[in-house]
Image 1 (cartoon, chains in turn purple, green, orange, yellow):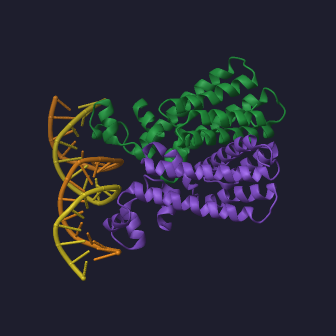
Image 2 (cartoon, chains in turn brown, blue, orange, yellow):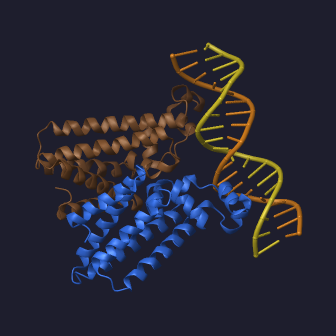
Image 3 (cartoon, protein in one colour):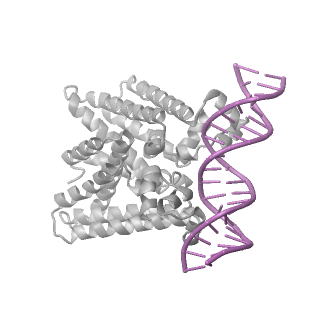
Length: 177
Length: 177
DNA sequence: ACCTGAACACCGTTCAAGT
DNA sequence: ACCTGAACACCGTTCAAGT
């Protein structure tokens, strides 16, 4: 699962090959079909696992009682770390771009990751603005989109400093607290 | 070229097949190699053509003497139209995500598209803030990233209204004039 | 329960051969 | 100048066969 996730973040769904993955883990490609009948099933399982992992990481952050600014800084750091690991992209950013070529089951899992992120961001914004639920949801979605965009542009040019510059601009501008 | 571009925006570089493209235009796949020796050469030509096309469209906009707000509205409309055309993605957004699996010549052309966009946006911002060159460049890059992110999220969920909502939030927030 | 080799229709690429 | 069929090593998928 871990090897496949790293390949997805590097080369995308189309770049993930049963034969290469099998080599990575020391079995034959047909053996992977014993666990995952189709590539779609594997992709959906990988996206689901990815969401569960980062959902846990982010929830852990919220239990620490940090302020809004610190939570947001930790959040944007996660995406920077992904870029630093061999210029990888968030799994949901990569699969989101490939959306039109994905089986429905994979599409659905990718959407769930985005919603999880938006909900977490809205909860963080509520620390400072508990009354503005609708307002927080809109801002959360805008932040999520902007962070994905910043990572996409930095990934495209293989330059993490671009990500950091863009995030700093969002912060100076007030989009991200 | 047009058929291949539409496929790239729909299914990405990995989803573009010489055999399918050949069927689209009524020749055999080997014949395409007469014009483009490799898939990388074809991809680079397509990205270059895409940049030239939208570069001309945007420059045309600037000659009309519109104000900053109208230019920005027309700019974000271009990305909305792309989504409305069968949930397609900006070519540079799609190929940007696939960056790690692209031949270098294609990577380079994709970067050029982004730079063209940033330069145009900076010129528009200069209409209102002629003195702040560095400031305009930073904001231009942040706007480009944010627009790409908004399109990516709307594409992921196949819902143009999401794009419009996120762009409206950027506008209300002041990121986009 | 878990793994394998062999087959199928796909893919980009090459090349000799056509007009 | 432009196009083609056939071959090569790849791909996801299937399946009978192994342990």
